[in-house]
Length: 259
Ligand code: OAD
Image (cartoon, rainbow, N blue to C red; front, top):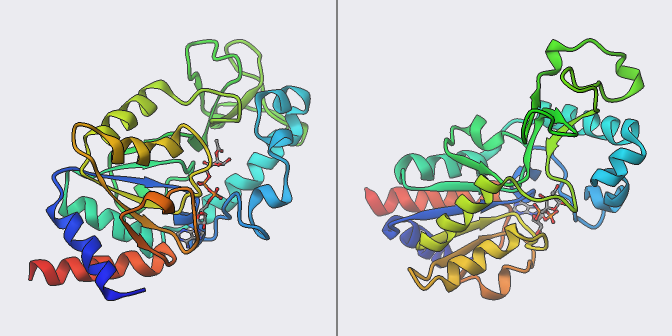
């Protein structure tokens, strides 16, 4: 990693009119939350998404899916933001036009101090009615329910359907307002920082291409990822290191630019 690339990234960020940040599981890895596709420790290396992360899987075996999400909730619940999250919060503090778009279902960006975070794939701490009986989503507060936790998911107090986590599963649409806003922000930004995503899951993975190809303002793409990803081949600046290590160095470079 050359200091020159860190310097180039800092200059692009400092000179930007509108910054978008797209994050994936990699940004939370240094907080102890496993990614999905790491060869050894990734969740999808150990578990089959078709059995755990689709509406059909939940219908077939609600208890299995519910228990798996309870396990992940505990893991995510214990996690604290790492220096990568704090650096992104610092960027938004210094450049308030910054918007964070995340594929992550944790709230580590918010815990680090970011506001205005677009959650494309939902929020693992929340629950909703499987049949969205009172509108989509019908959020259900588990604290208001009494049920046998060993038996699996509780019943929706309005209609009796199962309660499920408020996350996006395979074969499901993303929350419309969130993805539409993400498209608009990607089209309008002049710098997009893409942190810790393999770029394999659409539509989130299309956002950097949309930003880069925008006829409004073609964005410079800064990628932060220790490995090759689908973003790497068209990134303008690649910071090839873990985000918790390299993003604080970008903040230092920003300090030097402005001092
Ligand atoms: P992946 O697991 O596909 O990719 C994680 C990326 O993070 C990889 O490219 C790693 O190289 C990179 N990475 C690992 N450690 C890192 C670190 N310390 N700093 C920065 N980058 C690091 O995760 P996502 O791209 O987020 O969808 O996956 C996208 C979606 O696929 C997820 O939101 C989830 C999953 O199925 C749903 O649940 C709908």
